Length: 321
Image 1 (cartoon, rainbow, N blue to C red):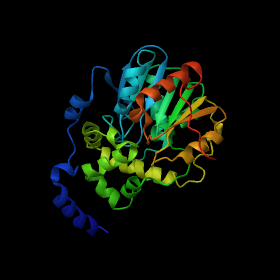
Image 2: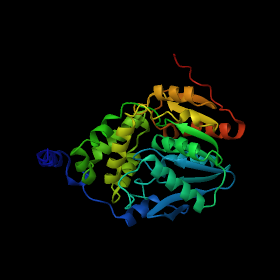
Image 3: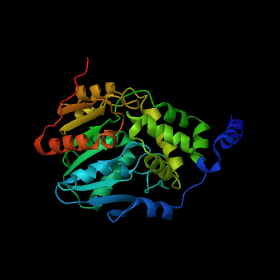
């Protein structure tokens, strides 16, 4: 199989050119200059330097992004919710400006929970509201299970948590040989395909959005870390016991889902509904995998209503059984 990369790489280079093939790591200083602002901070947790933003005052709301994403996915939510909360959002290990962890080759859930726990402890944060999308949602409900005393309420947006088919691009990148290739070469058109597939409305996908996802994928170590995450997810999504402990989560939970999600389908949301004893749900018509980016005004309003009033302000989309 080693011959494959010697055939594919020249062909892809001929089609796309070196600049867009994602074969070189971007300097961290360059990415930091472009993707930080006055609210950006860095905190050492073990061998990892976590990039996060800390904005506003009030009850603490912690936001966790999805796979192959970054804390910037919450920009529009923060704009609307910062008058009411202290909002802390982080680049998860292996993502964004946080980058890969030199002390691990695996980013399984116990590792993610441990890093989130130590991060919050270092900031001396006690009670939190918690919201997570996709992989971040998987981390969120597992963290709520781990620390029910700390998480007051939780929003899961198109969260992983039950067996399902992996998105094709991620499944493909997790394959032997292909994964090793992706560790040193991740073409921009592949990143763009991922971003486009995550949105229900292609018109919401801008050039700047695609560029941000590509740039942060090019941070040193992120490509290798993403392959590790993809492989872990591929293994876990085939595990028939993946969601066995969801029913143990007692935290009041709001499920937000896009009805056009091709990555984590509505069937997964229905399983969460059945398993979570204290939950409510809302489905957004025409929206894909990341409702907070695609429909920020309505989703942030619904999250705020749930946190403060215990109910959403939108009318739920009625689904067929």
